[in-house]
Image (cartoon, rainbow, N blue to C red; front, side, top):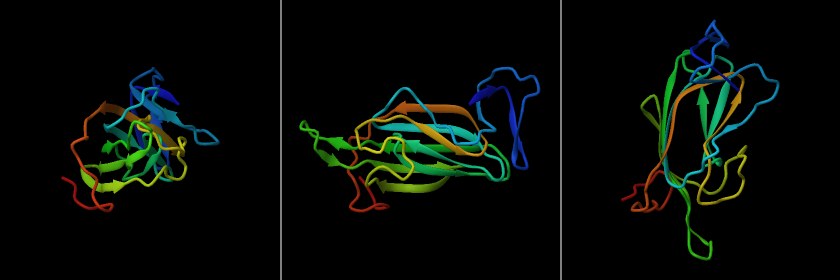
Length: 171
């Protein structure tokens, strides 16, 4: 991973700023194996926002809480927006699971791609394979990828109740 001041996608390649100066765009480019990028901070309930750029032939996963995967794909070699709300799993004082994690919604370019998905455990490829009440944000690219305007903020979704099944309504 490196940084740059500007990035665009042409064909299956990311084009970076010519001056090679450090910037606020994170870039993953030219590696033989995918390399995980994760936050040091962990969160309970959270809202996540960022923009991503993936050239043709590449893809990536973002892991909410380091466990719950959302696929990121190329779309016309353009920057795309991502927004997600996650309600963390709940535990009682004895650390017994009382409520599973709930991905309230995920939007890519303003279009809802996930609604009220009850998480039944860590998704395949997760680097945090156990359940817990907090976790980091992580990215796992397959090919090249650029990220900017990353925001991971704490939230409080404790008033919400889980739907009876994934996709169902909550209060």
